[in-house]
Length: 594
Image 1 (cartoon, one colour):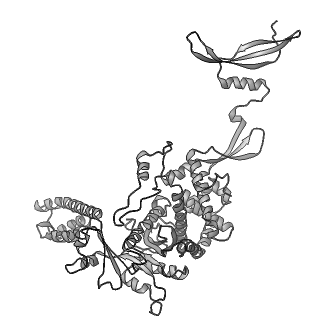
Image 2: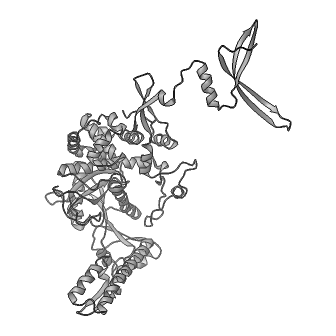
Image 3: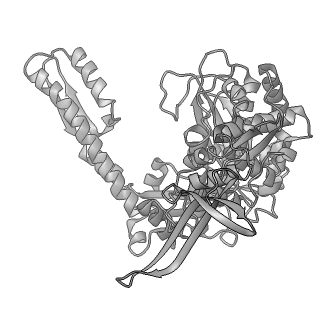
């Protein structure tokens, strides 16, 4: 007997191991809508409908509905009330916590939270202070550090507080990285750079030699002190027309007096540690010799090298027949060691570049010669003006003999001068008073070439990562604090780049050069990264900034379920790269920053 009323249910029937007439093994699965009823003392089943043709998820919905579950559309069951980028600030904050940066800044409080947020923001999303202020509300950083409601006055007050703490912060970094226990070589690197300012009212703004190539802009100078591996330790800001030697004197006093470090070896380039600064470096205020003399490593300028290469000088080409490094002495530098180096690769590069510039200058001069010969340009004055415009473009005027009359122009290369300059190609000479039992010749060369780490830090501070320039602040102390924030952000970036190296193109294990004079080389693993772009698991490598942007896609969502008024914070499912990034940082992915 067929029943037309009563409850129905879903029945799934599976048949496995069925072999058809062709001997092929097949598995079947069917689904039916059935009603069960009792006929007398017998329980019987009635098939109401065959559901086998429906998709599995539709059958599941029918089954769940028949079992009494309340089904609603997915969009109606859960509401995401807010979604904020989280992964990038969480990673930077995790590194800041690992380094104890908050405690280094000063005692806990509102000002410290704001200062820490400014530093983390400079790493995660560098921008002006006012842009950063609005950005805090759009990431988990603002809510978790309690700074989302900060005002511009709060920002500037925090900057003033941080600036007043600069000496204590840098002294803490010096104890970590320059003290003898952490830095047995007792060595520090120092270099100077510049950045331009917008506006003209800052007392530090001045015209000077622009390392950014920004002609006509007022600028500031700032010197960065690091440990031998390039970790930033201290920074000093100077007026834009300050020379390298003056900046070196200031930082040497900071290291000696404020950090209390004796018998250091200061490494600086040839324009910074001059003979005059060397003479003053180890003199006390009364002109007597200091009991704690400082060592130093620097390089000679081209005229001094040329003098050493004179016929009777100690620097002869025969020294480099079998080697590219030789230690010599000269009466012009008593008590000092001179380490002469010749880099054939650098020599060939400079020769090529010189020839390219000379050829480019001659190409620009050719139309002028034609105009003079055709009589379209006459007069010694007008001809000289036009030649001056061209000859200064590539700064090659010293290599040309130029003869100008009222109706003629003759240009000829000064081959003797070109040959004399070419003789110096690839040569550089280092000078130091550090005795060989403390630092051998190869060690002196390696220490000087470590200035590349400071130059790398400048690239990160100015353009690659932290976007220090241009500077918009007007007050002198605010400008100094802005540079301090960038320096502390660079300190974070230094450690982040190293920790996250397996996910980026960074060379994790650069090979130690067998010869300190030859150019550095990337490891085979780093070359493979650049070639294949993906790791063995198919995961793409990224640049450091690209990795932070990828981490930012890890969001924290405020989820509210239907029928409730409570929201629950939940993270999106992290990608493999995001999981690995936090694993490399040694922390689980945090739901909140605190």
